[in-house]
Image 1 (cartoon, rainbow, N blue to C red):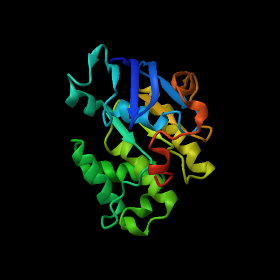
Image 2: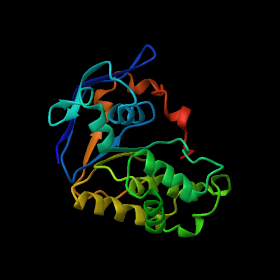
Image 3: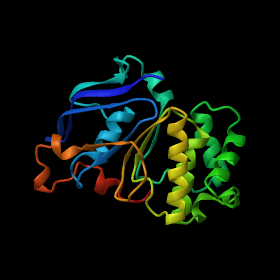
Length: 226
């Protein structure tokens, strides 16, 4: 499995530099924890890594091949779970997952959905429409996408919001299993999540205006809604 890396990354939001000169490297089995206060660019960096936000400068790619030159390959390797609640309210939990799995080209989306709900400990919500799910159930459903549509690199923005300690422990086990199989994880969190042997990336080191208290345009926009 190739190495995912970024070099001299600079991100602009409006007329403000969110971060500049940022470097990272993550190898198979690795974990990268993004650290920094609101406004340091954690959400923006995850979106850059996902290919949803284009950096102003710098390179980003797999084993030196830019994601711009292999967009399809990058999409196939990445699963991004952001702040926003991606649950479609009129679809059941199982239908939501099957939709995401089919969109990612996963085999047998319905079976993948059932298995993912079982692994997240919520098989009982399979037939429940999204509009009736609690915040914690929606968060587990969003995280179940990681299993229903497998990808090498998990990009996670505050993944444990609305989860209790037992659910967080379950999710830590899934992260450990993913890494043991050669998968990679990049996450931003205000909750302690076990990532043994993982590395920390302090975004303050690359944030020109970190002490001014300005957001990067995503923390308030996306909030903690899942």
